[in-house]
Length: 262
Image (cartoon, rainbow, N blue to C red; front, side):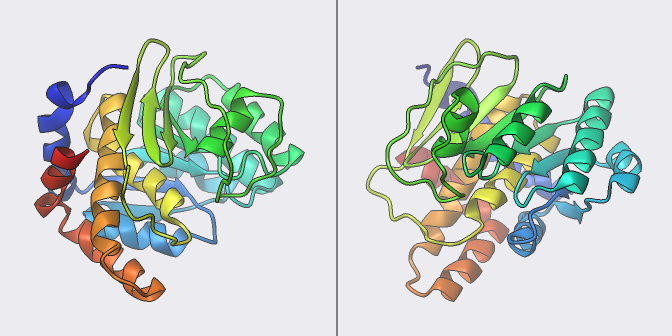
C-alpha cells in the first residue's frame, strides 16, 4: 500500500474549484432509480449533467462531452448497446471514462453483460462496491444488489490497465502495480439510496478536470466522504438527502478537513 496524501493532497484540494471553473459536461448513461440524485449532485458540484441512453444518439453526444459515466443499473438490450457504442466512442476520443457495474453480482445476466463490456478495448475507471468488484473478479454470484452485505474478498490487483475504485467501509483505489486506501472507521454511514451511483457521477466530473484516473478516483471518494459527513449530521432521510446536495455545493469548504481526518 502506498500513501497517497503527500503526493495527491494539493491536487485533490484543487479539483472542486476546477470543476466549478471549467463546468465540465458529464454524459451519464443513467440508472432511472438514481438519475435524479446524480443530476442534482453533479449540478450542485458545479458540473453540467447530460443524461442520455438511446443508442441512436450515443456517438454524437459522446463526441462533445468532457467525460463519460456508464451506470449499469437496470440493464436491458438497448442500454447495453448504448453502453458499447459510448465506450468505443469515448475510447476513440481518449476521453475520461467511469464505468459502474451496478449490481454485477445480482444475476447471471448482469454479470455476463458486465464481462462483455469489460472485454471491450477501453481504459478508464471501474467503480463499484466490494460485492460488485468481487463478482467481476470471480465466477461467483453473491446475488447482492447495490447494497452489498456480508464479507466478500476483493483482490487489490488489476489484471488490466484500468484503475479500479472500490467503495465500502474503506475506499480502495488500485491498479496493476499499487493500491491506495481511504478509511471511514468510526464514521456514520448514510442509508440513502443512490449514493453509490452519485459517487460514480462525481468521479466522472473529477476525471473530466484531472487526467490522472488514480487521483480523480480518490478525489471523488474524498468529496463524497466529506459531503456524507455533513449529511450525517441530520437524522431524517429527506433531510440527509438535502444536506448531501448542500454539502456538495459548498464542498471546497469541507474537503480539506476530510483529508486531515482520513
